[in-house]
Length: 275
Length: 275
Image 1 (cartoon, rainbow over the protein chains, first blue to last red):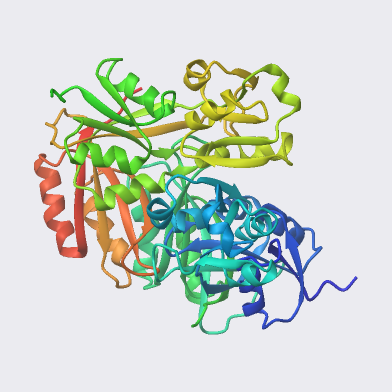
Image 2: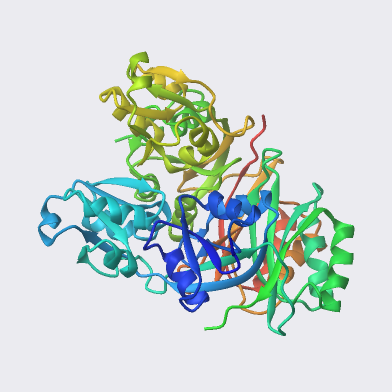
């Protein structure tokens, strides 16, 4: 089987991850919907698909913890990133549904992104957490008592009608997705690199990690902490910065970082997303 | 009304937040259950209760975003912290329930803390996100088809039976809670201070924020990023460190920090939790 143009994405049909895949690959490629983020990573790792796409961060709600945890465990590389503007709508199977809603279903990140709007407009409805907002849209399509928070692609995919449009709490709501593969990229001159760092358990360890970046004048674009799975109240740092791991400057950075970190894992270098 | 010994907590009866309140105040005080974390902050801010307790961080799942967002917006102070060991059980209204479960209900953090166990043992059950794990326990008490993930206090409060005990993915699972009040504390000699920093939007800004900590030899105990609500892809930093805001050293720190931050908000100084 030729898998060179296959792309695993967090499904089902109609998710924002599918929108990200369509945008990144210009509508080309053979898309394969996965039930979980773990499955996206597994398909790429086992070379069932050439690429995988998973959400990593939303501009309102912050990091997607599940994807961060997969990056900790998996051996796949990040080979690209893509940012998608996220507009959420409250969708239902028919316009009559508005008065008989009992539950509102969506992915937990989408529920969080619309938290204030939900508290104001539907404070008494039960919130139903689904694996994705497209899954929620699928549910709403067959049950008049369930509304779904999802985007335009899900609305069209499942033939839903909008009860309210653009209900996300922040108007500038967008999500960044990672493109995953079992390979490395070549430098393009406008690249980013992502690493995962286990700090030494000593005072000032984060400062010492940041010192080489400052000395070498390398721009950090992101720093994020996550609990270490091996020890309570220990943390790992996800750091994104400008440059490619094949650049001399970045190789010098790694030499310096290795001296002041307990463990360093390179997640990948990839072209920075440009609007 | 005398409110001096009233404590708002994230309810209903039986939550780990109630366990935290009972531990911190040695079983004393008049506890008032709130429906949301926002309500806990509001009651303290409006001086309806003297204290409030809300979860801030779990050792497996990381920050409680909702509490972080309340800290950004609210004027209440952090006056204490307390750590509670969190053991989750799968609970139901009777032992017959195990074979007829259709849904598993809990708070999204608790569902996340048991994600691997759920995927292994109940991959096909619907997950129902509730405002708290005690709310989920309440639901399970009246519906044989619903299981709840909650702790021992909720089990006793709602008369449930355990289907499986200690199902959290990490054995060292604990949650840190903040004690909130409209007042400041006095130094005890073993204090922590929490601040919120809006970094300048320039390369190296995080390094410059950490520099005064390093120069003054002040130990950071925690750093966490959160999206800024005012701008997409801008971040605020939550930083905890050793010392009290009335210490001379910490006052010197603030003088230096103000020179290299866009905005600095002091969230409070409080005695560090000791096991």
